[in-house]
Image (cartoon, rainbow, N blue to C red):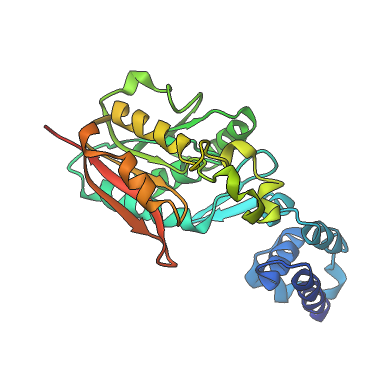
Length: 286
């Protein structure tokens, strides 16, 4: 049982030298994926079962390939999602926005709340809401065909109660049949300005799909402007929206949800590092 743990220690040093942000966690996750165990079970892998493919995985991570593309899985709240090239890898900071959305759904006096996830990617947000708010009905919209395949596969495997429906389409025009009836719109759209290209980590800019990263416009907020218009169209009076943004865009996004467009209770909310991370607003009921 000592062999694998020793190899993980060696891999940790290699990944640290390569600049990995979390070398030990990456090495353990790679080892767990290769040996088909949980990270907590790595100490129980016998020496005779050591799989040399571990070092192939380590080399790919050293070269900058995202951990989740190598293992084929990403963890988000209570989910294990299948991911890979062509779909945005969900991030922990988005979990905080989902937590807020779930709290809002619990506070609503609605029997079967209707939720729309715009730009669903892997369907992480949609599936988390369906799992943790069992009476919610969720429509997940994705415009990229490759990402849509990932979303559909995750929904088919994880949505045991059939509460999520996936839709291939642009989130600016999709679901017109639901206009004025939705209780909550949630979105993690692209929002990075192209001017920040050099500051984006290499494994993100080289591997996550471009349409999921770059928000458009000088400020990177064009996609969020589309989400605002769609949310205004989709929501019932009194319905809520939550939209993720970068920690530097809070002020700009705040003013997108303008009072003259019918928005009330606009607030920037913070992630676990106490940085502005998403905006929430309510559509006026009058």
